[in-house]
Length: 226
Image (cartoon, rainbow, N blue to C red; front, side):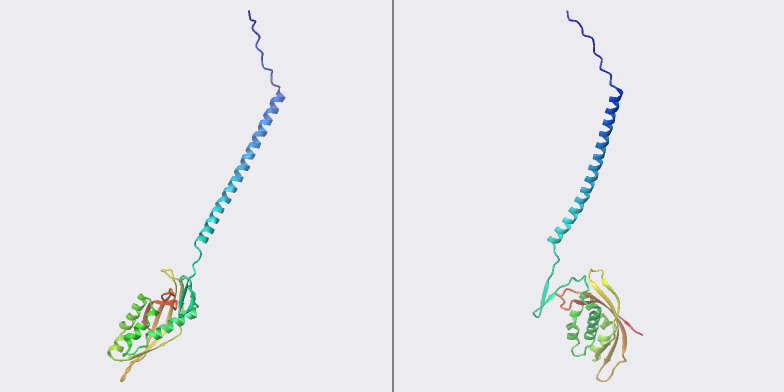
């Protein structure tokens, strides 16, 4: 017959051992928490650095794949760099000279050759600008005097005044300039008094492959100076 062994009770844990174990567990937990915080901080820093690196690399990659385009045009055997039409490219004084010269050329005509004279200066204008020029000639009856009264037209252009410049609505760089203009009509037997006007020109940059000068008049507004 098997004798039943008496149950052994676990040895009681001493209070000092329990305290030591609890203290060690607390220290381990604190170390784990500190490690987790440090790891999270490192991950955040690395993530931010990676994000910046991706952005910079993407920008550099785009610049490499799409370098600034530089074209060159030839006129009469000359090589001319093409500057984007969003940039001025010319000094304001040069633009003013262009506008004054265009007015002198366009409004100095005679009754024998006025058709050819008017059309020969069309390159100084855009399509809309040339329409404004024709309206200025016909609306004030200047063209009528030349054509019907067989008069010759001469013009004097004063110094221009720059009103504003910068990027226009169409994305091109432009200058708005006003000129005092005096027009004189004279025929073989009679002449008219000088007529003072104020011409307001909108001069915009143009593609030199189409307009070798690199500028064109896109708007012409005239008013009587009296």
